[in-house]
Length: 512
Image (cartoon, rainbow, N blue to C red; front, top):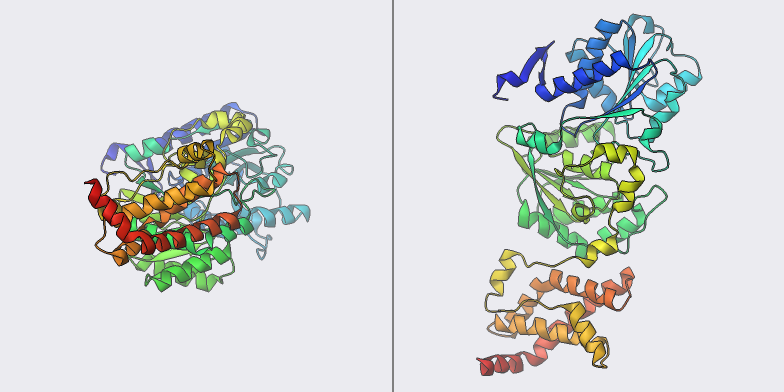
């Protein structure tokens, strides 16, 4: 940062002003609250939560003369935390499945994976008698709560970007007494600490998706939707339209989807790698090293890079999935929010209607209200049916240019349906009227029937939108039926053009 007044040297690290304010507020709570108090601290991804709790650890060890335990849920986070604490001058020991604990008396700070520590505590192989502070990284994960019963006299500090529990049945207010809210995304962008997100949304029909026991969309239903040819084509087209050549991270819900995305981009000639939790450690390291070194690289992945991954050079994020998890939404977009050299903005392409569901990434949220009344927030999230009922397809500029001779591109499917049924006609007449309208657009902007058929292919997304609206009118929305209807419509449009091109052309000339 250019403003030196916002920085303060502490050990070998620099703290920003908002980080100092948060640390002071947390230490005030240490002083005033009982030993077994549970405090939760919220700060956006990229705001430096690890930096903050590392400095808290350093100061706590000096001031309180008790030991500190840091809990993480992934091995990558344990290693990152271990390294950051060392940068703050805090000597610490990682407790993993192979770690020997015969030297634990030599350390005042420990970093542990939650599952590993739980096993060690059950076996009574880890001495916790002098641990005064337990820090829980990514505290929204419900897996940490099993540890709480072992520490009746320790102060707990949970840190998270989103104070909403991963288990909706176990809200965070039941495990934490108080929430401290840090600087907002909007303010961090304004002050130059985070990059601004340029958001681009592509309307997607999600009514075929099913919600699982965890409250989010199932992998199977997501795979069925996002591996179909139309969705893969839409993904590649969105990349080419908005972010071609930028270093890109694609998030999917399902390994098979990510693999299909890999082949789709590979076929189109773009540099891409696939990464999931089945890759070996060496494979992962090679892929991430390649991604770091390659300016236009693309990684398609399955959730594995939502936490414990920091690559500031990322220029674009593609959400090739839908989620009902606000936490996951913020984690995915947050991967691109780091300031890096001249980079002060990044692009986000949403193919899961997530922007409609949660609002803009930098929107101001009432975290205190969400913490105290999570059900109120969860109940207010729009359903997919409500979201899709408000969709309005807009032609991209490059397609609009191809239909420059047309003055009326709109077709109100719902209104045409109502007037058609009221006139006593079959619902099929609605599609026939729509096809006639599309054919007119193509003929108006073509020299011959071959040009018109080529132009009709540019209407595929708009056709999909019309069919989605039509399916709601007739109350039929199964995935297979809608997919068949879209394909049948496109075939009938081409046939209509071949049979009627000359007649439509003559009508257009006569009307001038």
